[in-house]
Image 1: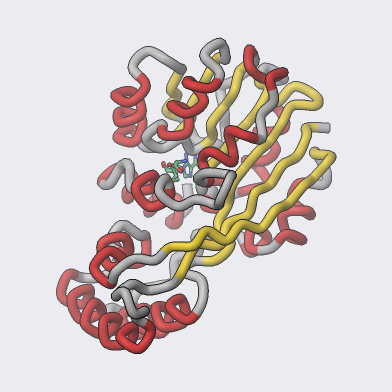
Image 2 (image 1 turned 120 degrees about the horizontal axis):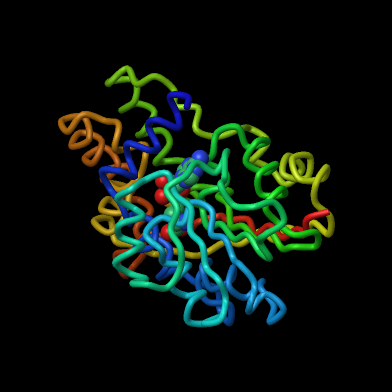
Length: 270
Ligand SMILES: C[S@@+](CC[C@H](N)C(=O)[O-])C[C@H]1O[C@@H](n2cnc3c(N)ncnc32)[C@H](O)[C@@H]1O
C-alpha cells in the first residue's frame, strides 16, 4: 500500500459517509443524481445477478440498488471498516459487505454480472491491477458502470479555489498527494486503461450544477481530502481568503454558481 492509499484509508476510517451528502442532492433534469444514473445503466438482465459496488463507502448506492433490484445478490467492497459499518447500518441484512482492497478481490472468477462504482475508481492506486480484478470477477459480457471525477468546482469558483488552496498548501509545506493516476484524468486515458479487457466503451461527460452559499461551500470543502490535510489555523486563514476571493462571484440571491464535472463510463467485459 503506497502513501496515497494509506492517506485515503485513514481519511475514510476517520470520516465515513462524506460522499453522499455532497452528491446525492445534485442532479440532472430527468436523470436524477449521479447515483441514480449508475442504477439506470443496469438492465433487467442484471436483476438476479451478483452486482458488485467497488469502493461502496457507506452503502448509499447499494441501498438504491436493493430497492430497484430486490432479487439481485448485492456485494460491496471497501477498504475502510467504518465506511462498511455505516453501510451495514444502512443496508441491514441486504447485501454482502467485504473488507478488501479492490486490487485483490476474493470473489470468484466470472462470478459477477455487473460492477458499479461511484467516485471511487479514479482514487484507487495501481489502477491497472484494479481493472484487471474487475475484469477477472466479471462474467464475459458483464457490465462495468462507473462514475468518476472529471473536474472539481466548475467555472471561475474552481480557479479561485485552486489559487487559495495552493497558497495554503505552501504555508503548511504540504507534500503533493499523488492520489490519481494521470490516465484517469481524461477519456483517452480511460480508453487506454480499458481497451485491453473491455469492449463497447461509452463515455458521457456530466456537469452537475451546484449553487451553494459561501457557508455551504465551505462546509462541503471541509469534507475534502485537500482541506483535511491543512492545520486548523491554516484552514481558518484559507476560509477568510476564499471568502474574499469569492465575494465578486456572488449571484444576486447570495449563492455561488459552480458544479461538479463527472464522467460516466460504461463497458462490457471482453
Ligand atoms: C469518495 S469515496 C466514495 C464512496 C461511495 N462510492 C459513494 O460514492 O458514496 C471512495 C471510497 O473508495 C474506497 N476505496 C478507495 N480505494 C480503495 C481500494 N483500493 N479498495 C477498496 N476501497 C477503496 C474508500 O475507502 C472510500 O470509501
